[in-house]
Image (cartoon, rainbow, N blue to C red; front, side, top):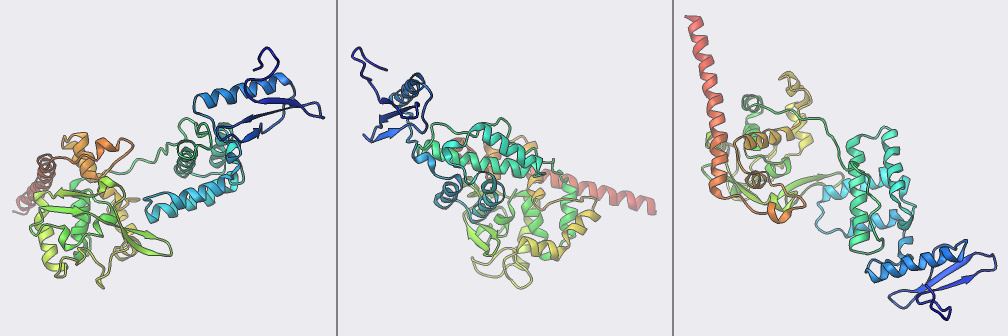
Length: 387
C-alpha cells in the first residue's frame, strides 16, 4: 500500500527486465525477503504484500524459506525427536513413512504440500489397493508431522491435512466372546497359560501388559493386579520392557472374585519364588513372545475348531471391555480400567475410585457364577437322561 508521496508503507515492488514484478519486505527478524514468485502485474505484487503484512500483524507469519525443507527429511527428524514414543510405535512410523509417504511425497517441500496434494495422495493409496486402515494410519502420521510444523516450529500457517474422514479406519467389527467361550478357550490351553487367558479377559489387559507381570504385581490372594510396565516386540531387537502404551495404562485393577482361585493356583504352581519372577513364562522360564505362544498352542487351528475363526488374542481384552461396559460403569471408570487415554487427557487420567472398580469386578464375577451355574444345570439334565 502506497502513501501520498508514492512510497510504500510496507515492502517494495520493482519491475524486472522481463516485465514481471518482484515483491520484497522486511521480516520480523529485519531480514529482507523476496516473494517466492514474481507477478504479472504490480497490483498482484501489491496484494501479496498486503497479505504478508496482515499475517505479521496477526502473529501468523511464517518464514517461507524454512518451508523449503523436504517432507521426507522433516518427517524422519520428527520421528527421531518425538518424545515418549514406544519402540514399536517408532518402528510402525518408520515403516509407514518409508512405504506409503516418502515414495509419493518425500521429495516435496513442506510449503508446497497443499490439501489438494494430500487428497490426491490418499486417493492414490486407496486406488493401489492399500487398505483403509493402513491409509488412515499413514494419513494420521502425516497430519501429526504437519501439526508440529504449524504449531511448534511455525514453518507453515496451517496444516494441509484437512481431508474429511481420511483419519477413520472403519475396521471390521471384532467378535465379542461370551464368558463360556473364554472359559472354554482357557480350558484348552496348556495349564501354565490357563490363567493368562482368564486374566487378560477379566482384567482387560493388553498382551504386552499381561506378559510383563511379575509376582509383586499380583496380590497373594489374587484380588488385584498392578500394571506398571509392558513388553513390546520390535523386529530385530526382540522384547523390550518399557512403560505401558499410554499414561493411563499405569493402573491397579480389582480382579473379579470368581477367578481369584485360578490366580492363586497359578501363583502356587507356575510362578517361581521372588518378587521379580515373571507371572507367565515359556517352558524354559523365559518371557512369552506372542508368535511363540501362538505356535505353541496352535492358536489358529484351536480357535477355528471352536468356531471362532479369525479370533485374535487381543479379542480377549475386547470382550472384557464390553462386559465391563455392560456392567453399567461410568465412562471415566471404564476408561480407567481399560487404561485408555485420548486428547482429553486431563479427564481420562483421573482414576476410578476403588469402590467403582470393585463394583465392576463384582459384576464380572456374577457373570462367571451364572456361567458356572449353567454348566451345573446341564450336568443335572445329563444325569436325569441317564436315569
